[in-house]
Amino acid sequence: MLLAIDVGNTNTVLGLFSEDKLIRSWRVKTDPRDTADELWLQYRSLIEGHEVDGLSVCSTVPAVLREIRQMIKTHFEHIPVIIVEPGVKTGVPLLVDNPKEIGADRIVNTLAAHALFGSHGPCIVVDFGTSTNLDVVSPKGEFLGGALAPGIEISVEALAARAAQLRKVELVKPKSVIGKNTVEALQSGTIYGFAGQVDGLVNRIIEELEVLYPDAGPTTVIATGGLAPLVIGIAETIDEHEPDLTLLGLAMVFDRNRQ
Image (cartoon, rainbow, N blue to C red; front, top):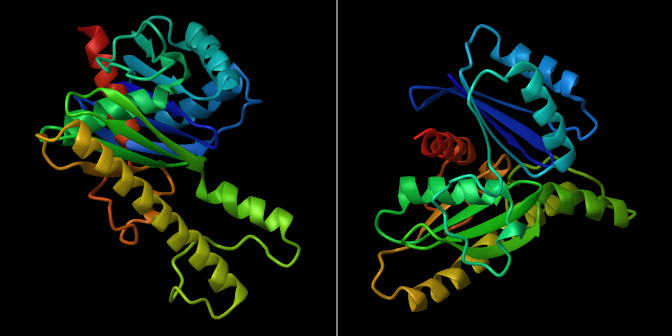
């Protein structure tokens, strides 16, 4: 079985694949202070009872990636391991000013989005995580760039920290856009505000894509990331929801490099 590990700034998502099918996934907290031994104890408890014969990893946290490399040397040295970094075949051309700046997760998402949804035109991946990333994929599967914005939780925490009479609230859809109390007003501004931000950015990106690719099919907008369910059904431009997009992309990268 293939174990895919996506290390994000806030959470780490692990997925177990059997014959290219995701059979189990977990979401755990990312702690950059964890040692290789602590990571091994955590991961081993999750995959207990399953025989892992391949490993595919991407990370946006250098400290954790360093410890994962050490964990691999100790516990996975006899199985094929792919870490998404420069030199690894992804099949994704990076049409940006500095390809080294692009996070491995964004490259992996581009690959998966094009493979799953890009057969008729360009794609936009909206990844709702620590930051809200909009990644633009050409009809040929090229990474064109995108937009980065503060994530939903970061914005709520910053507002609570800077405004004396405001506080952190549960991130759920309020009963109406017009909040009748402080909690509902904060929830409305957060949930509907971020949905509106996404719709505004997506519509502007689509306008540029229509100029770049006038003969291409319609653009598909895919939502992913742990906070995506907060805006699904509210953001009007989202076409698809694929919560496991990064894990699926990691499995595809593993297959490409094994071949």
